[in-house]
Image (cartoon, rainbow, N blue to C red):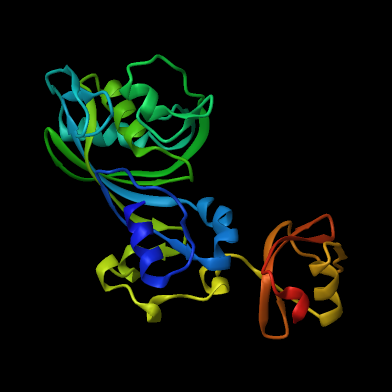
Length: 269
């Protein structure tokens, strides 16, 4: 939110982010400006890659270094044992968010309830771990690369890992390296951000295939109607264009193309 406020002040426009970072985390943050904020849900669905530093032998109430230590154990493990566990730590699983998170419980943020010492339950959700790779191991410190589905809490993964290993673990450092096709290596530091770094909306949605529409088709879509699309394309979201102009996002299913999120001035094109 601090990064978001700085961007708003810099460009004097409304802005929104596409996925929070924990206070101890750093790395890639995609920020949408102006009318592009209407496409945030599509970017939030993208897989993410994180590099995490985890400390074994201790467990904290926040699952990271900002919390209070609630458990300490000996680390009677080898790096080979940690690696062997990570090799089987992939696939679909249910995950419960950490108690100190931005999830809402009856309209209240979970971290506020946790700070107040109140008891509550957070619902589990399905996540998918595509990769869990041990990058470096100098016990009790391990560095792990995680490639995960949207909505995955790395803090919860590390806490779960520590419990399986039987010694506990918490996140000491976390860096987001990738969001879908976007990489930290292509990002710009917040203090260096300027007008020239702003990308067009369809460039940021490059991970979606495109459909070209005639002017009549675009008018029909902009009025909220659907099109019978004759071409054999798979179901899903598509970038919509008329001539060379990007007009928004449509959803194709069972041969019907419907508007999903359109730019506000489509009717005037």
